[in-house]
Picture (cartoon, rainbow over the protein chains, first blue to last red):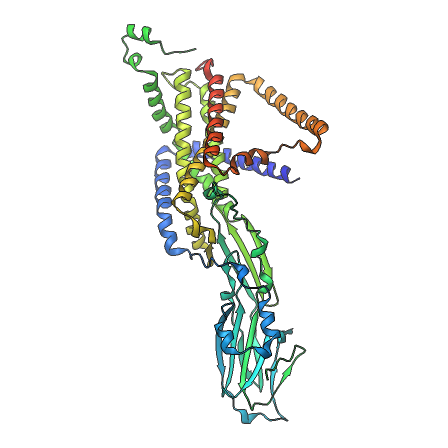
Amino acid sequence: MYATSLLIFLLFILLLSAGILKFVGRRISKKLSVRIMAVYVVLLVLSPLIAEFTVEGISSTEESGKVPRFYYQDVLENYQNQNLETLREDPKLHLVGTSEIPVDINDYSKENPMVITSRDRGQEYGHYMVVEPTDKVDSIIVTQFTQRVFVDHVDISTMFVPWNWTLSNEELRASIQQMNVDLYLHTPPYLSFHFEPGYSVSPLDAYDFTFPSYSTVQWIQVPKDLEFYYQGPGPQRVKQ
Amino acid sequence: MSILPDEKEAALMNSIIHKQTQVAIALEQIKDKFYHNVNAFMHLILLQMLGYFFAYNYSMSSGGGEFFNFTFKYMSPNALYVMTIFWMIIQGFTLAHEKSRQYYAVSNNFTAYFSDIALLEIYAVIAGLLTMFSGSLLQVFSSLFFDTVTLHSSYASLGIMNYLSLFFTGTLYFLIFGSAAYLVGILRVRFRAFFVLGTFVAMTLLLLGAILGVRFFGSAFSFSINTLFAFYLYETSFIMWLIKVLVTIAVLYLLSYAGIKNLEVNK
C-alpha cells in the first residue's frame, strides 16, 4: 500500500515536472531564463551568509540523557530535603524567574488566613507547588523552575511561559497560560554524512523524546508568620 | 549512418567543416545544445521551488501536557534532491529525444552522443552545486516565514569535508539518474514501437522472476527498490562507493552508446 501511494506520488511529480517543462519551453524566453538563473545563483551563493545572521544557531549539543526523566518530580517529592539555594544552582533545572508580591502579614489571621489556590481555569496545578514559610522574606517570593528538557538537542525548558502570580481578594493565585510552541528544526541532508558510518538524522530518535519531562517547580516563599491555607485537592507541600 | 567523412576523405575535401575533428565538432555541439536548452535551468528553478515546498513538510512530531503543546516540524533539503533527480531524468529524456529531430547541421552518432553525455555531466555538476547551497537558502526562507527556526545539532559537526561529500555524491547520483534516463530515451528512439513492447516484456519478466524467486527460494529471496538504493546510499567506504558509482555510470554510457551507434541520424 505504501509502495503504491509512493509510486502514484512520484508519477504525479513526474507529470507535474513535465507540465512545468512544457510551460517553460513555450512561454519563457531564453534571455529571461538566463536572468532568473543568475538571480537564483546569486541568492544561493549569498544564502549561507544571510542564514548566518537570520537563523538561530544550534541551541545545545548537550546530551538529553544527562538529565533524568521526571527529575522535577524527584524535586517536588523530596521537597523537605531541598532548599532554594541549591535548586537555583542545579544545572538540571532552568531558572525561569522570580517574582515578588508585597504582603502585609497583619491583614491575615487564623480566622482570616490567606488562601493559596492551585486552580486556574478549572484545572488543578497543586502538584507543582511547594510553600516554604521562612523568616528570610518579608513578602511573597515565587521562584519558578523547569526541568531541562531536550528534544532533538533543542533545549525546550527555556521556552516556558512563566506563571503569573497575583494576590487579590486575599487569595494568591496563578494564571497559567496554555503554551503552544511550534518549532522548526533544520536537519542537514543525508548526503553530507554519506561516508560516516552509523550516522543518522532520524527525527524519530526515541531517546530524544522527553516531552513528559517538560514541567515546572513553583517554589513559593512566604513570611514565616503569615497565616495561610491551601485550597484545592493537590498535595499540601509545606516545607518545615 | 555517419555524415562526417573519415580522415582520408576529409583530406580530399575543401570545406572548412570537414577539416574539423570530431571532438571539435562535438565541443561546438555542447555549446550549441547548452544554449538551445538554456530553458532547462528555468525548469530546474521551478522544480527546486517545488522542492522547497516539500522540504517544509518533511516530518512532524508533537507532544503535550497540562499546560503546553509542542510541535516540532523538521525541514530537510532532501526533497530538493528528489526534485533535482526528476530534472535530470527529464533532461536525459529530452537529450535522447532530440536524436529524432533534424536539428544539427553537422553531426554523426559519435558527436551527438559525446555532446549529450558531456552536457549531462555539466548539468549534474551545476545541479550538484545548486543543491549544495539549497540547505542555506531553505534556512533563509524559513527564517522569513517562521519565528522559531533552529538548526539540528548535527550542523555543529559539519565540516568542509561534509560539504565536499554533499557536492560530490549529489553530482554523481544526479549523473546516474540522468544517464539512466538518457539510455531509456535512446532505446525508445531506437526501437520505437518495440520499446513499448520491450518495456511490457521486461516488466512481466521482472514480475515473473519475483514470483518464481519467492516460490522457490522463499523469504530468503527479496529484492526491492530499497535494496538497490541501499547498495549505493549505505556504502560508507568512499573507494567502494566510487567504484560502484563509476562502474554504474560506465555501464549506462556503454549501453547508450551501443544503442546510438548504428542509429540513423536525422530521420
